Image 1 (spheres, one colour):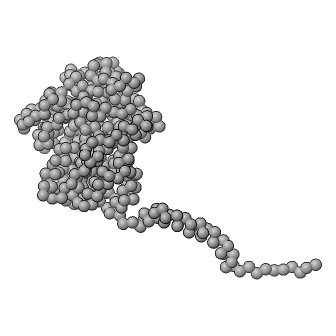
Image 2 (image 1 turned 120 degrees about the vertical axis):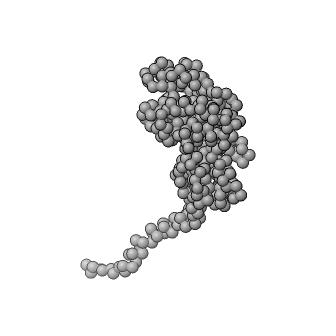
Image 3 (image 1 turned 180 degrees about the vertical axis):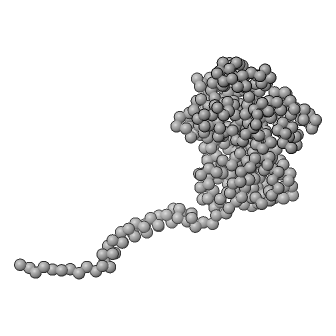
Length: 375
């Protein structure tokens, strides 16, 4: 019989046998990350850019947009504010850029920045629309006020005659007189025209019901504003952004017809598992497109503007969020229609009708003062 043998195992060897395999995996993974460039992301210098935003702040608050900008070395600090308050803010020089929603605020900012660094960029546009629900759009259709944009069984877009809609308001029509159970007046609800550009656009929509030509004098602008004022006042106290109220399940109880931006509707539909055919849009026959300008005050702001115009990932994400992208020469690219149709949405009638001819900035601003009693 052999004597039992005892082996002495070096504890350092046992440790290496346990430690080396996971170390090898770690080293391999580290090498792959370095080769791909992903590992350097957290160690890159990041430039924080401060900006004032009106209604289009949801673009820069999008998580994918944040990640894309971070990968380019930038973080945008968003300060939300209404377009008109933005244009009048006394400390504009403390920001790298601003992003108001419409031409009145755009021009006011540029005027204030006369003689200083100011570079505008126009990366996309979105029409201002009237959002409603199918039964209300169909009631307006039966009343001869709205027409479906296409012949589909459940169209998502309708064309709205503002002059005929004005008649309904003049006659104090209620929805139950148009075949519905709702006894409320036929009105449009919008944000405060003194603060939000979409609310200001409602003033422009109703102004078209009084004629196609915008006023050319201060006196004419004030007279037209007094004519429009009752139709805006009919909603009572104006709120803020109407989209959050419209898109909630109980949206009908908040606003039957709400002024929103088309991109908010498109983005909502793209988030659904299937198309929501109960929520539809009314496009006034005289449309208005909000073309916000990113107005840069600094080289850092310039860089963000250039990325918005050139970066393919940012431009793709803008379309995914419902915006019509623009190129440097101002022409709309065709990627919007291609993308949304590929997702099962019909292309909206943006740009197919006439355009609201808003008055000159100073005259329209005076109209808003009169309608909204802003000052």
